[in-house]
Length: 195
Ligand SMILES: Nc1ncnc2c1ncn2[C@@H]1O[C@H](COP(=O)(O)OP(=O)(O)O)[C@@H](O)[C@H]1O
Ligand SMILES: [Mg+2]
Image (cartoon, rainbow, N blue to C red; front, side):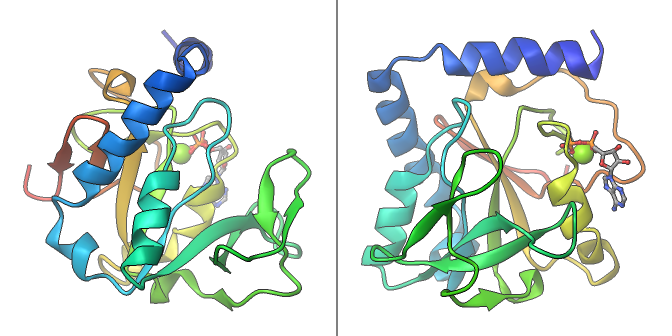
């Protein structure tokens, strides 16, 4: 199966889940993230708002707020085409729709920080494999935005967030693909750094 066919198949599967299944998985994702000491000690965490049936980090976000952590969301960079910017997200943050129809914090009114100052970034994905390769929706946004992290070591720590069924045996890693250090699913947290 090629990347396009794989994307289509898995996206269809995750969109078919019921609200009850999504709720249960979202809570499972939060529990999996808690297994990481790095996550629990992080002061700034970036997550995302669910779209296209992606596993829902909302429970994790609300839990982070309760713990007094700073939460950031990716937004389409208004100037650097193909890049993401990370904007502070609070319960009262004013949102707007981006060109994909996804809600994002308004770039003009909320604090933006460079990705290298974020301790942990939880990334959505379409498929992952046991080596930490990530297949996204095909835009390469995270690959472009996080390309710097290769040269500067392991900051931020990258955690792929997914349903367990999104694992595939092997993904072709392209030269520009940025690998993940952890995978957090509805069932477990897997560390990929020492594999
Ligand atoms: N660092 C980068 N610089 C320039 N283009 C990039 C970079 N990373 C990814 N891209 C481009 O983004 C496109 C999509 O990347 P791909 O890895 O297939 O998508 P995704 O990661 O969303 O699954 C590719 O055509 C690739 O050339
Ligand atoms: Mg990629």
